Amino acid sequence: MKLTWLGTAGFEVKFDNITILLDPWISRPPEADPKIPLNPVDLTKADYIFLTHGHFDHSADVGTIAKQTGAKIICSKKASEIFLREEVPEDQIQIVTAGDELDFETFKVKVIRSKHISFGLTTILWKFFSWKVLKSARRLLRDGRGHPKGEVFGFYFQLKKEALTFCHFGSGGYYKEELEKFRPDLFLAPVAGRRNILEVIAQMTKFLNPKMVIGHHWDDFYPPLSWRVPIEEFELEVKKLLPDIVVKIPVPLEEMEIQSIT
Image 1 (cartoon, rainbow, N blue to C red):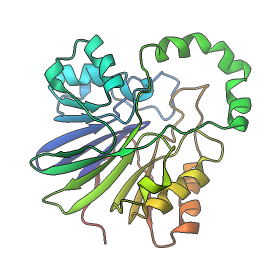
Image 2 (image 1 turned 90 degrees about the vertical axis):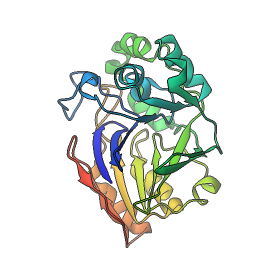
Image 3 (image 1 turned 45 degrees about the vertical axis):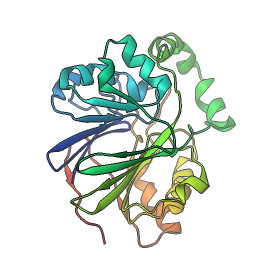
Image 4 (image 1 turned 90 degrees about the horizontal axis):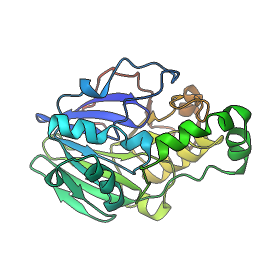
């Protein structure tokens, strides 16, 4: 399996001549950090797009990419309204809900019940009531309009030929009892949303107990509302709970080859 981080919660996953996109939001503002030289039109090959929830920093480019590639969008009913409004053909949209199981030729997917992370009072006071954010409120309202959250999912993928499993979540909210049903080889972990996010996602990782974790969503993707998480400290936090886990920090657009993880 080949894995490429596209920034924020976005990934391109390739295996068995299949290309899957996860939460591909490419049209970041110019002040986002790190800068990623990629545009939605550059994604010309995709078979499936899996969307964890409908917020704009996950969904805003999905319709465009689906129309130019013919990819099928896997999303909630509420999120599907975004793409129908954008004139994505209805037969390119597959609505799912938590608990669904999908069986494709070369892989299977289980849809995991999840929730969006709660920002917490200290984060709200620190970020949302700052003068810089208040000045940017108009832009936030513009970008957020028309992109309802809808149901929030995680996805558990089982690759049939490669005997590899992985989970992708787009936000750090979760239900402990749901996570403990799965033991993926790899966890794509969303490290964003709270000032104490490193500790939150370390706990989330513990409940999934994967062999490897890759942190994402830690970039300063929408300043001044967002901030760069000190992702260099993520390995330390996770290894306090899971000493033997492999922790990787992705580089934007740098392809990683993930083989069977032991």
